[in-house]
Amino acid sequence: MATRPLVPSRLAPGGVSAHGPRRAPRSVVGGYVALTKPRIIELLLITTVPTMVLAEQGWPEWSLLFITLLGGSLAAGGANAINMVVDRDIDQLMERTRNRPLVTGLIAPRSALIFALALEALAFAVLWAGANLLSAVLALSATLFYVFIYTLWLKRTSRQNIVIGGAAGAVPVLVGWAAVRNSLDWEPFVLFTAIFLWTPPHFWALAIRHADDYRAANVPMLPTVSSMATTVRHMFTYTVVLTASTLVLAPVADLGPLYWVSALVLGLGFMLGTIDLGRNPTPARSMRLFAFSISYVTVLFVAMAADVLIRHGV
Image (cartoon, rainbow, N blue to C red; front, side, top):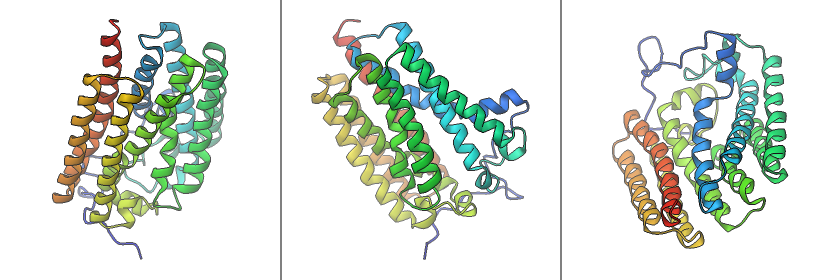
């Protein structure tokens, strides 16, 4: 039998999240934008640009950078829109997602699906024409994995859903590298591994805060089916292995002190934040760790790019 986590979501009077649900889009255009989940796209692009810098060993051509970011954004937006089409039944049960455009009826499911497929087709064409076929195929593979493996299968059936499904979010580093080199090597696979390992503790920190939402929708995120102690133990394990993987990148990619010192300090910070959450299991602490995880991946990749640019005098 599943056990309740030690930290329930704090609800304001009337059952509304203390942080409140996200504001519903007020226009059809705003609704289509919301379907793409822009905040998630921003996070994916944060990893793409530094990876291109590493692949180029300097600043890539602006035209290639633009094409890769455009194609990657379109592909991620399409995948997110398909996710909203599939999950519209559970989105209406969760306070955090109840204002999404398919739940409110602002956009019809059929229209959303057509929009999503159009984005995917355009993304493939943009990347193939402007970069190369390999980057286009990789972007499409991420969408297929996200939709069929995570959304349609694992999300509703396994507490390891985000662990395996998170692989889709790690593909942008492969796309960025492939756009520059038209091939893959050890460096992008190490980066892929790092993002893959970063995703579970990052998302579980958010899931702790919204555990009641996931429970109401019968989605077996780890914090809803395991104790807080078990969840934090898993998070800590991932942060340790994550830190190790980021340090491995230094010799593999021939990165200097700026990068590996940053990787070490950030990794220790992530571990300490996870330990602190275990000792002080509150929604506020989980959201603090969630916010730190975003800063973690941002600073780590910026440090990687800066290390390359400084050492090559760019």
